[in-house]
Length: 264
Image 1 (cartoon, rainbow, N blue to C red):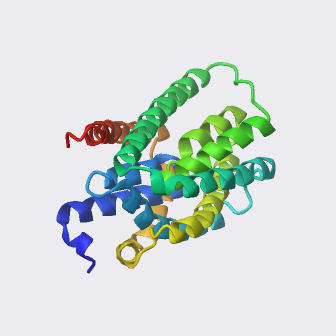
Image 2 (spheres, rainbow, N blue to C red):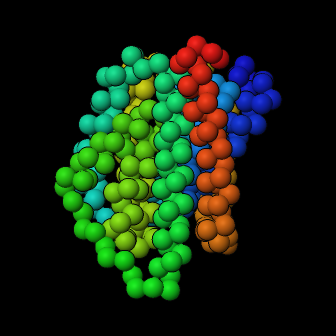
């Protein structure tokens, strides 16, 4: 067994992180954001991202199969090329990024994402008995900007959901089309990230050995996500998850700030 997994605390957190990622891929897009921040409580966020990527790729294939006929081609044509630009920027600047800065940035992303989703859930609850909100059509400029941001934050810590959702949610796509488009977008992004991750040494044998041990949990998590999506009220589920993301985000910001100040 890899040395990292001999630490009971890391083993528990890693299992939870993989299961949450699988649940996200199974129909609760966005909550995979919790995986790297959660693992960053015990290891560096850079190593956490390197461990999670090989696990996410098989999950992406399973999710693509489920949603293979439900996606929006116009949005993908805008977002994927922009994401490649963001991933490239992330790869070129990675060697100058301090781990404490990454921890701080991931914490900020977690908090911003939580607030954004809370507002979205409140708006959805209010509009349930009101007139439907006006839908926004795909926009080339906005798609290029938010797609680039999604690629960059996804490269940094698999945290591409916040900028992606800022662009996609106002379009008012059906749940199935929105989820299918998200699945294909992030599957493409994750596949592309394999190149710079490999060049930067994040796919080391140490990380890959941990990924391999955790990999059997991938289909379990995806199946659990599909099961929960069909049975549990979405607002209740997201209340639990968003609270967890918020708390972890605060902890990472605390650690990042004190680490940058040399006080941790």
